[in-house]
Amino acid sequence: YGAASVFARRIRRLERAADRIAGGRLDEPVVDRGRDELGQLADAFERMRAQLARLDYARREFIANASHELRTPIFSLGGFLELMANEEVDEPTRREFMGTMQEQLARLEKLATDLLDLSRLDAGQLTLELERVDVARVAEALAEEFAAVAVSSDHPIRLERPDDRVEAVADETRTLQIGRALLENAIRHTPGGTAIRVTAGREDGRAVLAVEDSGPGIPAGETRQIFERFRRGEGGHASGSGLGLAIARELADAMGGRVELESKPGKTVFRLELPVAAASVAERLPQTVS
Image: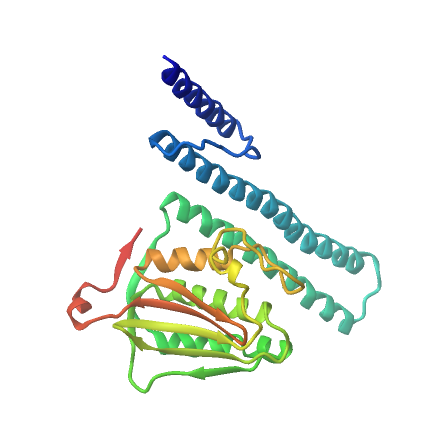
């Protein structure tokens, strides 16, 4: 009877812990020092509570960050429109205002696109047009697209591509989107003067697009969380919604590939690995996956 009473009290503690978690109270840990099956269940509850607490914290951080990301361009656009409507603005100043307004609109568009992609991924409604994609051509397009940004931010980009053609089975638009996220991350989170290398090739039977920088690297404690949704880098270079790398990894997974990270002081490499387009699959391309 005594043993049964002790066991029942442990079960009731777990029940109360489950009720707390269900009610959104995630600050109190789930503790059971037993080594039996009930103790293992309590450990599982504690892992679930800790993960939910991290997600809840990330959600609240994201709401604050997204609000800032939305508010800043909206206020900026409103200010410029008011000036143009109420003040005598000469042509050079007007052109300058228009350029800044276009930049703010681009910020809003990117945030809206990221949120839409995220909702489609969660709902399983993202459509992919799988076809033969020349990875080297994608790398070249990325280097050209970011050439002006690289010059203005003092991040020289070096392109390295193979002599032979390397084709992957992928959605070209989404592959470019992943590459943009990796390049933008390298530029944003490294100091001026940091060189960036974009490479394309074939490794271990996979088509690979890699972005390497010679910056300070990512702290060891952050490498596992770097692909989490809403995760933003620490320090003065942190900006954005924190969705780019998370979406990049999920898009790669949806195409049968993966995004890998290798980082140490002086070298950080993000690698997009995709299935190689073999001759045996030529007759099945293009195709649509949703």
